[in-house]
Image (cartoon, rainbow, N blue to C red; front, side, top):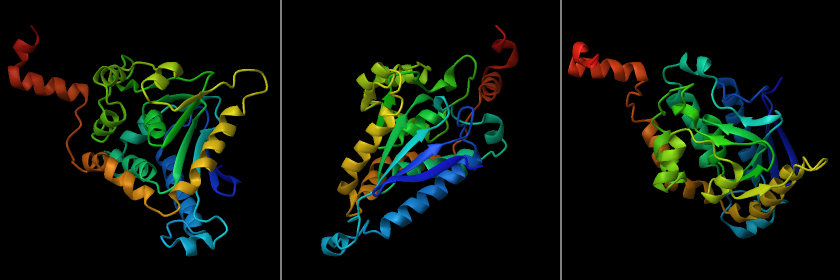
Length: 272
């Protein structure tokens, strides 16, 4: 069973539907599928004029180089609940070799990307959503949260997340609250710039409005990137993400920090 379904609802728009119940954990297998699908989408785009700088050659193709991607979920209540921690920590270089390269690929993708967030987006799931160019969210069940600092979790951020979150959330109080695991409601996320729109799909029978709106945005924006510079422009903006990932700076867990503290002040004094 595929963990992500790839379809093409419109000639210029591909749809990636996260399909890994119950909550779309970002496992190595799912991330591998995402990377593969992005390659397939880009190949299709380039074979239809995408990235061709000569407008005459580009306009001679059926799609004239237009292209966009929508990412959504078919798991009720969740866009993505972040990482599968047990599977992730089996690889000490999980972020540097698996997660970060795929997120950076999405951040700098040469096509327009739209996240149709139809449920909670937590931790790595929030990073996945923020990696897209446009973000719209359901008015129903859905929160955005970096819950690493929560009492139940207590994990430090990977090296890559810091520069990216600081860029996406430039207002210091909002960044502070995000790192302290605030659960942003849709209206709050819209106010601080995490979202572009909220789509009211709560009335009975209107569940599909979020995806409809996402496809509208994708189709509207798709022609703007035909010449092929969109990915390179985003690379200039977000290179701090992958540079931080490649820093190889040790990420200290709470027990590591405790050991460092005890080694610095002495165990007896640390107990005071």
